[in-house]
Length: 453
Ligand code: ATP
Image: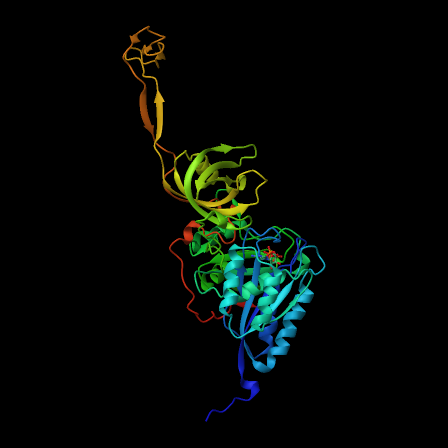
């Protein structure tokens, strides 16, 4: 005989996905998540089964505000608390979102139980494809999830995708510290020297703290949003330790550790057919350099790549820094794999790939062909006319049988992977220091303290 537990002791798993709450004027979806963490914790009867997740989606989406991030909270709650949890989430989104601002279309999706294979597939596609709110609405309905959406309802795409992306594969962590409301909009008071010290002590277990090429602190953003700074790393412990090393001259209103797909290359897909090349999607293509690199005013460098039976223009823009020197040194015939995003092309022009990184497989020899030098005075010889060899303009020596010399020059670049300067990385781009650090999620228990308050 089985005994049914009284309802007050029954628990259910919830996945709460939130997206599109902020605008260019301020706000941040992760901040709403951090506030919800505090509120849900204080309800009692709510247990977090994971750190809050930040899920970066297709970085090539034209209507993103900044980095196309959505968030998911995963909690086990007493069944009787369902209504109050839902109300708390809705209240927080309604009060914390910039509803009414152009391009702000907030949404929340609450799924009871676990994401279905269809939701998981939707999430995978949201990383590398362009989806519609209609698809999201259909899937929300068929899965029995509840949802609320405002404005165009586009936020449902990100909110549902966050629910389904449970980060079982490679993942990283970010501790985000937030500012007090009255300080938002003013320069962030974060001590640069302490960030460099923190980086030296914790990297490569933390990453993208400081851009040494541009002498620029990367942990603090520059906009009006409430993020004071964020530290990214391989586990929750190291980002918490690094957080304590950063000196700030303004109060930290709250902080929380998130689990994320930052720095994992989760968006990249190898394209093998022409039909897969579509604007606003990521692309990984292996091919041969078929047009010489060309630097244009503004410092951007372009070259042509022949791959999957057509020609692509590959672009390394000015912010990618030294990376452009590697691109500028490519030669016709070099074999490379390019990683980037497909940009909409003007009619009749070749498709452009905005480069995120490049893997050089094979370099052709750089051959220099030149006239021989004079054996008497060492000066470079001049042609004496068709099939008449060479003559020296200085000492008049004639060398009718001499021919051109070929020499192979050292290439200034080698084979291997090249990634732009960290300042130009996309949130999803895997930095060089993360290669070899990939891991799967084994549901470690949460560390002692992963948020405050
Ligand atoms: P931030 O990084 O500051 O949180 P953001 O860059 O994430 O902001 P949002 O304000 O969330 O930008 O806007 C992105 C919008 O694009 C959301 O409405 C989201 O639902 C939608 N979206 C995200 N990924 C896709 C996709 N693959 N296809 C279609 N829509 C998407």
